[in-house]
Length: 167
Image 1: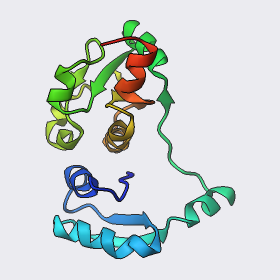
Image 2: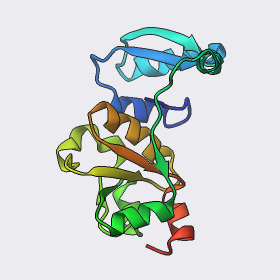
Image 3: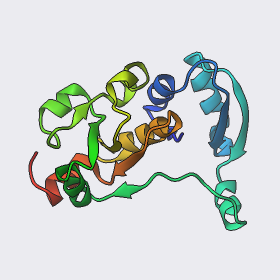
């Protein structure tokens, strides 16, 4: 899973990583101590190792394979949803969802996914969206690890409003 080392790092990691899961970090060396400290502060201390973030591109250039999550545009997502080929999962906060959302979207905030997985259907492919695409990308990685078929909606609701129209 990918959690940028930003203000939401602790919240994201704490809501999607179980206490007993081993953790391997990909981080710039100058920020390693910060990442470890932040994880330990929230009780995630099974840090098994780390890799310098600059080595990821070299790994890929050398033929290594990186896990990816498929993405679609908001227009493609709207078409797939209209044809009932997918279930739309909105991972924004309930207040954001109430202000407008894709038709038929299920709302489970990204920080609540782990505790509310039973509300997320497994029988259809999920199109996951948030406001801009960042929280949904993290949610996709989490859901994929849990065995769900997922696709991120590139640009989220901001793109939806531009490409499809107001929700």
